[in-house]
Length: 83
Image (cartoon, rainbow, N blue to C red; front, side, top):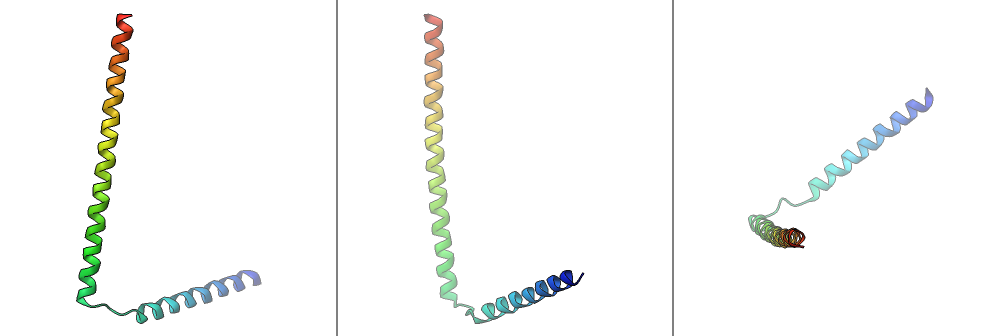
């Protein structure tokens, strides 16, 4: 039972230290200016557009490969019917 109490006390102390550290870090960070907020928003937007463009390119590539596979399958099926 003593080990359980010691473990709980250690856990509680650890949580208190983590909470205190988090509060200090949050208080130490500057709130930021309006320009910084705009810069972050612009960066976010540009990254979002880049990611969407990359996804579109990947989707186009998959569509092209799917079309190629469908064409090959059709050719194979027509060749097997003829021969």
